[in-house]
Image 1 (spheres, helix red, strand yellow):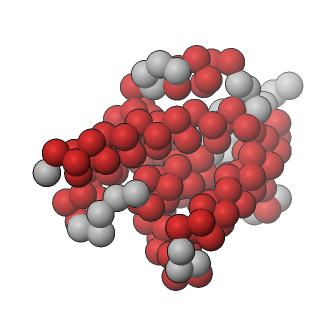
Image 2 (cartoon, rainbow, N blue to C red; image 1 turned 180 degrees about the vertical axis):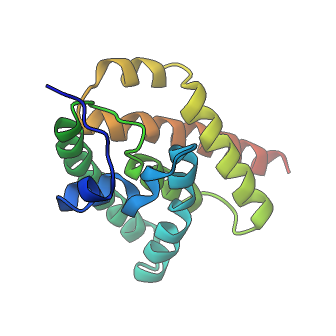
Length: 162
């Protein structure tokens, strides 16, 4: 299987590609994961505007996660790379999850962003294991879910301290 270089034509060739590449943010020439993570904020706002309580917000995030499993799986197969760096739907959904548990203050949001990116990039245990072993749409989404859990734990710990 050959590896394709994604571009605008590829992005619009299938709805899964558009989703997996975060509506095009994954085509950013530098740090597409960071650019994609920023789109977690509008997704979070959309979820909060659509569902007023946490259980329904979680349901919407689960739906976004499952959509990502499909989109990233399809797109990874089309590219010939299971977890292409331009596929950023995983960052978008995971950061929206982190924001559900982050105080609505720009300093906390900035901290949440930094923590999530740190754990997504460094991939501490067990994130690195999941990333190495799960080479499919679920694996693409799951390792970022673990990074989100780390970020949420730190945020909650800091909230408890402050």
